[in-house]
Structure formats: C-alpha cells, structure tokens
Amino acid sequence: MAEYFPGIPRIPFEGPGARNPLAFRHYDPSEVVDGRTMEQHLRFAVCYWHTFKFAGSDPFGLPTMERRYNGSGDPVRVAEETMVAAFELFSKLGVKFWCFHDSDIAPEAATLSETNANLDRIVALASKLQDDTGIRPLWGTANLFSNPRFMAGAATNPSPHVFAWAAAKVKKAMEVSKELGAAGYVFWGGREGYETLLNTDMKRETENLARFLRMAADYRREIGFDVPLYIEPKPKEPAKHQYDFDAATCHAFLQRHGLLGDFRLNIEVNHATLAGHDMLHELEYAFANDIFGSIDANRGDLLLGWDTDQFPSDVPLAALTMYSVLRGGGFTAGGLNFDARLRRQSVDPADLFHAHIGSMDAFARGLKIAARLRRDGILGGIVRERYAEWEGELGRRIESGACGFAELEAHVLRTGEPALRSGRQEMIENILNDYIHS
Ligand code: XUL
Ligand code: CO
Image (cartoon, rainbow, N blue to C red; front, top):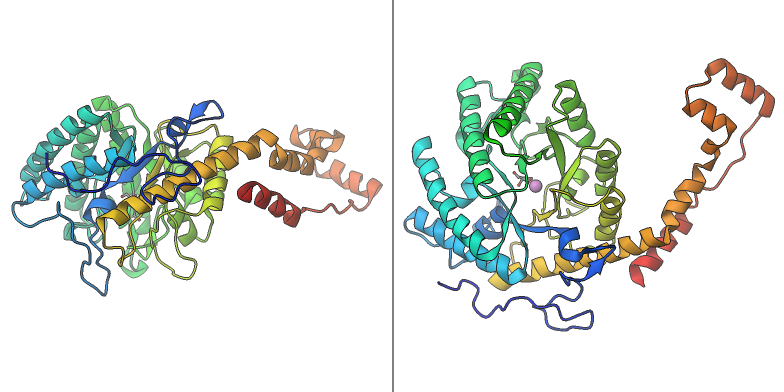
C-alpha cells in the first residue's frame, strides 16, 4: 500500500523530557488516571475535513498546501487515496476515532444516486481500513452548507424541495454512519439561520428545523442506529445569525419542540467564544441541564472575530475542560474531536502531526491536572463552603419550598444586613496556577 507520510513513524511516547518533535511527552494511551486509561478518558478523534481537505486557502488567497493524496484525476480514485492516507495518519498518531461529513470522504456527482454510489464505494474501503486498524467514527454528519442549493439553509430553506434534499442527504449519512459503527451523529446548521430578517419567516423556519430533527430521530429508531444525536451550537458564520446560537438557545429549542430525549450537544470551543461565552460556560450549562454529549476541541484567537479553528494546545484551557468533563462523569459516547486546522503557512505534511501531537499532549496534561484538582478537592471544597449557608435553617426552608415572601421579609426585619464574604477569586486563581505549573 502507498505510504503518504513517509519518514514519519508511529508516534511513540517518550516522556516529559523528550526533545523529539515527533513523540508524545505526556500522552501515554495506557497510563491509568483515576481508574481509566488516558485513551479511555480522552477518546481523541481526527476530523477529516480540516486534516485532509483543507489546503490552506482563505478568502484572500489560494491553497498553499500540497498533499500527495489530494491529486487531480478521477475524483473517486483521489477520494480512495485520501482515505488510505487518513488511516495512515490515524494509525501513526494512535487515535481510535475519526469524524467526517459525507462530502469530505466522497465526491458529489450530478445526481443523488450517483453521489450515493460514490459514498458506498468509499465507505466500503473505509470499512475495510477500520477492520484492519480497529479505528471507527466518533460521529458522522452530512454537509448541508457547501452546495449552492443550500445557500438559503437546509431544513430552514424557503423551499420544501431543498428541505427534501437535506432529508435525503441526512438519511444516507445516517445509514453510512451506522454502517461504519459511528458512536454518534452530529447536526451543525451553519446555514440554518438568516442573512436578513427582511426576507425571513423565522417562525416557519425554526418550526421546520424542529420537524426535520424529529424526522431524523424517527429515522434513527427506524434503522436501529442506537447512538446519541448531537446538535452543535454556533452563533454565526457562515449565517449572520444561526438558530443554534449557544447551549442555552439549543436547550430551549429542544425543550420547546419535545426533542430533549433524542438530542444532546456537541460543544465547540471557538463557537462558544463567538457566542460571547467561554468554553467552560457552555460545558457547565450542558452538564447542569443534562444535555452534554461531546466536544469539538479547538480554540479561537481573542483578537479575531471569526472561527479560526486553531489546534487546542493551550494547557490551562485543556485542564479546565477536563475538570468539567470529569466532574460531569467523563465521556460516554462522546469524545474530543480536533475540529482544528493548520495555519496557512504550515505547509508541510509533518505539521499535521505536530499539531495533533501538541494538542493530544495538552489534553493529557490537562487530564492529569484535572484529576489532581478533583482528588485534592480544593476547588470543590471552596464552592461547597461558599454555599454552606444553604444547609442552615433558612436555606433549607427556601430550597424545600416551605416559605414565601412574607416569611423572608420577617427574617430580614429580624436579622438586618448579611455579612459580606469574600469570593476569593484571586486566591483561587493562584491555587489553579500551582496545579497547572507544578
Ligand atoms: C463548523 C463546524 C463543523 C461541524 C460539523 O464551524 O464546526 O465542521 O463540526 O459540521
Ligand atoms: Co465543529
């Protein structure tokens, strides 16, 4: 079989002092942390679109990256070569999962039947490569945003004909995701929103989106695809406003339409920041409301207002993310999908490895820091103490619903002003630094 990343070995674990740029310093898949191996905790996935289809173009410039597998010629043959290259990269990195859109892996053709036939051919190859390596999709999805037919949305399109196209694409993408043994299925509605309200019927569009998602949930049951469905919140880009704005908006939408039992959230770091939140806010919201599912791990640039999808090599962020995940009970079907791409000047194939190695190491460190934070119980203790008064007589009466405004007014008249207690933010940040840098 052709080798697409010659000169790059299977990435070994060499430990914290290593100087080899093609080695892990912290990610040792078999190391046990808190009763599970790092591999079981972190469930890393490589994303197909950025890693194999992004070639460095931006709105101002042409592609910069040449890849041996992304050649010209018969598009199905090119797609097959890319799939072989993908499994070489997955295996060399030692990840157990990958994520894909239908149109990343197989070229679209003139008709739906031809496109589906292309997909079947590539899926047969992917199945074989999966059997050889034990790697499988964390989730699959359908691309409902690149083709011009989806310019005004997919399930929220003014045209039912386009709605039908979206349904046909999702139907097939669910079928192939099931065939490949995917652990989940994602809906990200990049064009499910609007450019201007002047030409938009928001009520109809959002109700049709709910109808569409209900059909998807029904079809999942019909074919016995017994995995979580995830909505991936994002506030904008490419739409000016996207209906799946953030975790809380998605939650309200799912509740309003009776879809909570079927859908959870796939939360992405850069989408959180575009919504004016940090990742921890989104995670905390999802865990508090029992809708957490999976994570698209990347990061944005605080000085740029768009989705830069950079690799998440930031250790403090990884530590706080994993602290939240561990507190929430860890991943079940979800995992950490690197929805991240190289910078345009990182043109070497080896850069793909440096990017993933750095991010996997950051999350391995983050996991260990998070496990120590939890074991020592310091943050948990601080929060418990901060709310300790709720365990007293007054707190218990309020939380059990035993009292109302009149009794509370009487309490204030009797006891006067409350004592002011420090939130100790700076002290807590210092403790966190001790854990991150020790
Ligand atoms: C776009 C994005 C998507 C989804 C899958 O911002 O994150 O790639 O993850 O469609
Ligand atoms: Co994403």
